[in-house]
Image (cartoon, rainbow, N blue to C red; front, side, top):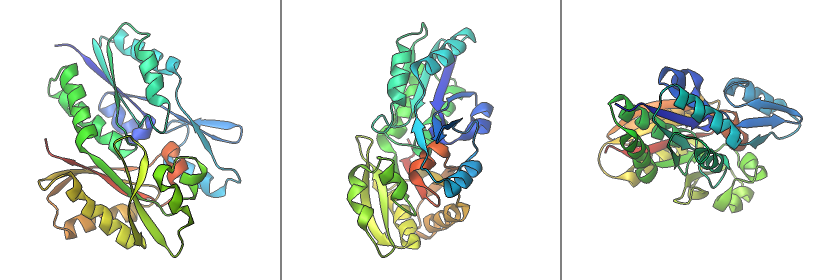
Amino acid sequence: MAKVGIVTDSTCDLGPAWLGEHDVVMVPLKVSFGETTYLDWVDLTPEQFYEKLASSPVLPKTSQPSPADFVAVYERLADEGCEAIVSIHLTSALSGTYESAIMASQMVSVPVRVVDTRTVTMGTGLAVIDAVAARDAGGDADAVEAAARFVVEHGRLFFALDTLEYLVKGGRAGKAQGLAASLLNIKPVLTFNAEGTIEPYKKVKGTRKAIAEIAAAASVVGSGKVRIGILHSGAPELATELEAALRDAGIDHQIVHTVQVGAVIGTYAGLRAVGAVFCPVP
């Protein structure tokens, strides 16, 4: 049976421990505070990052891996016996990471399937989780890629931010840009559209109502059982509230995984973001 390698980037927010345990190679993005640059999830834990974010006089900046970073990983996996690689990454609309992976895939001897998830954090993470399950079940590269692409095509990510400040200043607000002037505790629920950019979904007043709207959005992906990945940035209590809202809404669901948002996505989300990716059961 052909050995299939799985690669992702740090913005899936599954973290090095989970990825290592499941034989997935992570290529980190970078985050810089002034002249000091850190590798996402390698040099900075989420907890360390949010402490820096709260105290830093300058907003951090992020940067993508180079094609050479991906070439090194792909070649190493080929040397370890992988006959094919599936490489799963955050939306190409907001980062050049996917393009770096595409370029690298054309520079190595092993065939590489590069997947643009058109989303971020646990949206990408769920695609990785399902790709791992397909590989571990004995699937070939076609099956592993198909498992990831099912999440891309059928999953939806909805999230709420405590403030839009970081998203707007970081230039990633997309169609949510006009909401920045909203006052009076308005908490927009945001989503990623089919092009992989951010757009408004609902405007509500207060975090509790935003969480209720996120839970209700599970119906967008269908009426059957829903698989869910939850995310938060420095606010585990909001993740717990979202779990309770899902139960209260009577949604037939399975929570697959919960993640803390890392430094790169946290640069744009800020503290106290909460959200979930919903995907129907295949």
